[in-house]
Image: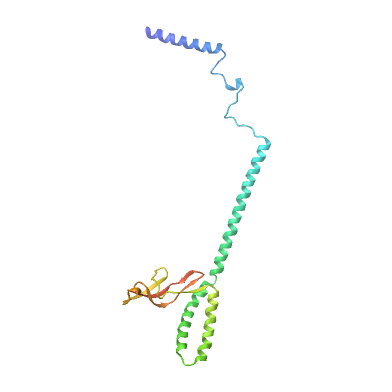
Length: 194
């Protein structure tokens, strides 16, 4: 019976507290809007000026992005055009490298011949041909006497050398290597000292 009387007393105490709060003008169950305050979750209506400012900022952002995209496109196409012009004749020049090798061998034979006027005439033609290729960006790779570099050279064979300073260096060049606009188009085939 003590428990029932305790429960009854607690319920009466709650009712007394609620009645006291209502009498004092405080009701915790009343909506906040009644007292004049607004809910923070409700959207605030934008003024026409702030809507126009937001639209203007969005348009500016789109314009800046479009301008940046166009600038990137212009730079990329200019770079691609330059690369295309530099390597446009690459296949033709690569095919002419064999002819250039033959010219070098013929020049050596002409220097050994007795007919100097023929040798000079043919040398003029060969030099003109070399100059035209050099004007197009062809450059001979200097390999003899340099350290062997697998990025530049292709080792055909190795030979024993007596001189310690020639070990690991290119001793002879079988086929010349070439650059076209500072890019390797043919590796030099070389003999390396060991």
